[in-house]
Amino acid sequence: INLGLGTIRGINMANEVKLKKKLIFVVDDEEELLLSLQRVLKTKYDVLTSKNSRDVMDMLSTISPDCMLIDIRMPGMTGIELLKEIKFAYSQIPVLIMTGHGDENDAITTLRYGATGFIKKPIDIYALFDEIERITSCEEEHESAEPAKLLLLDDETEFLTSFKRALSVKNYNITTTAEVDEAFELIKKNNYDIVMVDIKMPKMNGLDFIKE
Image (cartoon, rainbow, N blue to C red; front, side, top):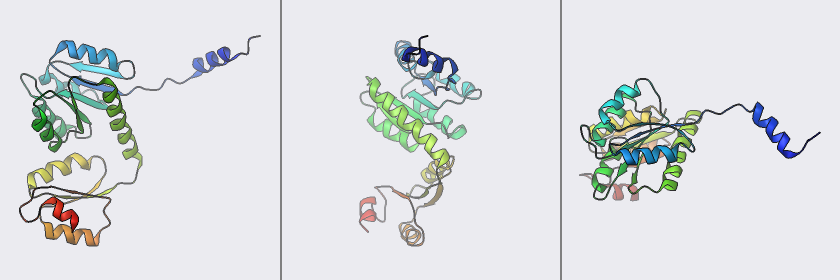
């Protein structure tokens, strides 16, 4: 009778409940890159792809990806335009933006529209795996953790509104203000876990606010 390690492993594998893989949704008009990413990511995740950015919103009505990877420059609908639509309709989905040389300013803009982060091309696949794991692990932790108290200070009220909407799905307790004096008063009265401050404001810049 073979009771060695191989037999035990075989029994365990036969009775093991198969864990559901995380679903990664990749959007890029470059078919060669899309296929390469699909092949590599499939070693660890379930992968859905689209090379037509205009099809994405219809696809999202029937699926719920754990993370999306979107190219910033695409015909028909750019990555930034697509990001805006995703965050308006499905703000809980983490989105990573793929950027190329010269896209730095646009990449920073995507963060203001709710992107979780960005990955530079040519893509370092190990860095991509790390980023996906970081993002999806944070999502799981947020679902079980007590809601954090956030204070957002920015003189642009439109940004405050959109950013609050994007974060509210994470069950954060969010307060916003466009006034520096009000922010100081709120901090005195509340024990915030995180205070997010715009670095450029008319009355006092973000660095001086932090010093105070």
